Image (tube, rainbow, N blue to C red; front, side):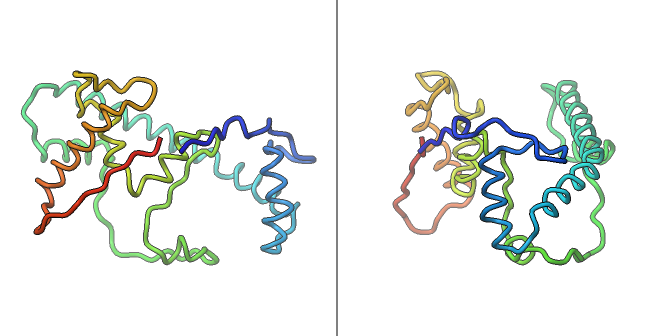
Length: 204
């Protein structure tokens, strides 16, 4: 299954009296279908979105900077400790020291109102991906079922030898190796009490 989302998109256009650049078909969907259905004025929506972006962009840039800094510190730690015996406690202490791990706080409750039930009351991961990246969107759609397979396929847990190299497209030899490795891992980690038939599939 594959959707070439990139080719389906048009070049963004600037909204009148706005600093927003919006893809035309997305703008049409929002203005002609979404907003009438929820009773929100078009100008109110776009001006509100623009204000949110302007208010939160500086904070978002700072958070991205913090993420990059933490990632660099973690990368440097692993390089520095390459080949050394693993110590869970030492690694945890390091993550606390750089601020990656924080002490567990007291119980709390979110007070934001007017949040859709799918986010406010229904437990489950919320996936946000760029719609113009077909692979990201496909991975997000399959994440609840294929995350272990995808993680194995894209890393060096599975050897590139014996025709199992990842390459640019899907390699069925590597895919078979991923399924065998995943099944063996699950059998060791959470074995079932009775034999079952496992069905495996890959969406291409």
